Length: 149
Image 1 (cartoon, rainbow, N blue to C red):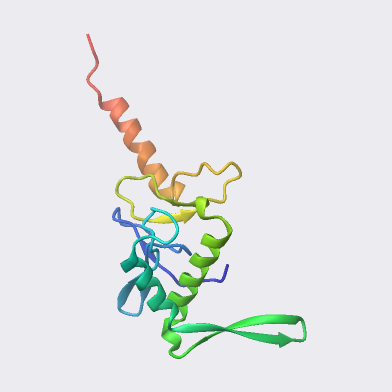
Image 2: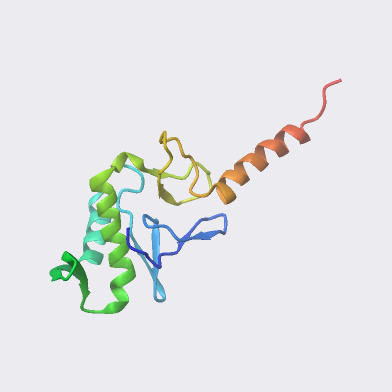
């Protein structure tokens, strides 16, 4: 996957770079980059239209290099490069393993991630943030319960 300057925001306040982010920060505004919202390939029509609008800002040009056949992205406006690359990477993920694109299990998180775990059971976009929050809240609930007499 190409390196993307995408920044996803979780309602809980953390920021993390992810290829299949719910929002891609581009300049001063946001462009929605995941059209399915966790509902599966294709999503709803307005979301598909938003993704296709981002993809309209670039294209792949086939090239032949000294190393062999290649592809080179082209953009009319280079500022669309990060959003276009994230949208293209999302399409690649949908093509290869759509069942591995998941929504984070933390109730306050809006992020989606690509599950690369061996057995496909990853639950959190980030174990260090969302997973830790869930574990900490379970621990707090266990330790602050009034003791029965």
